[in-house]
Length: 373
Image 1 (cartoon, rainbow, N blue to C red):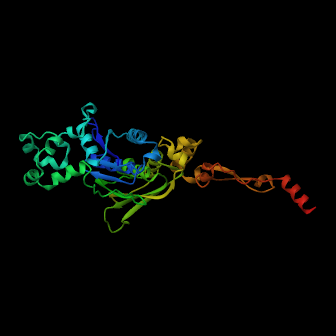
Image 2: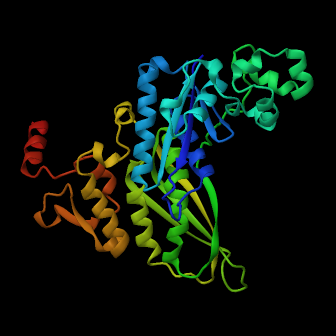
């Protein structure tokens, strides 16, 4: 078996931080599920068992490199001041121990498992002072002591952890599972009375949780719904909602965030808002070629993405009926051969590069005459 231990570290210069360490860990676990279904959260780290995925991703080095590149790009694109540290080992506790030992100091990593310090073992942390006084500073020092005496003095969990670290006992973890659809709620720090101010709370749901869920599911988002819960009053509805749709499935949600900001600017709140709820309505599985691309920006994989984003943003700002495009019609009369329709309603066909039906004119008449003859 082969294990990889990951940890998302918040940079000290992040002030104020957009996310906390727990949210960064959850996002990292979602991304890890895109590489293996055996992902567990243990203390501050994310553990991945990747022996069944090595052949698919071209080996351990290639898999670790792809994971590091994806996490770096993910944090950078979302302006999250965080970085990822990783280590590997034959067992989960070895990988976790190496991660804790070389945190911020890669050159300090021990080549031998027996040389790992005692503080890297979770079960030994309550007994570090006593172990230090008896001269146990590494895993090897503890293994040299009689097992019966260690169990009597420090308890059975410490010996069980050592057995798991050496591969003599199986690892039992609760594996992480991504839900089929995204649905999360965010409590606001204070009551919000203006709709544009809701974007700050919605951004917390968009930046890490939703995009990380999309990466783990290897899907692109086509439509989402933002629901805001209003302060209870007799003369107003308990909630309001906003549905955002895009022509192309996307994992980079910056365009969807801009559309949401445009539409929130046109909303009026009848009462203060105390919480938000974000739901994914429509998603599409990414093709093999798209999934193999390192970029998270779906528009970079298809030509004309920027033009479609412009049409969607203008439609959100000015209204769907204010942004129009012409559509050809199968009619022999010149004045009826085209008409103007809402660009928002036909943007799907633009995204798929599908040509609208066009009139054949005199050629159709010639073909009909030949058929009758």
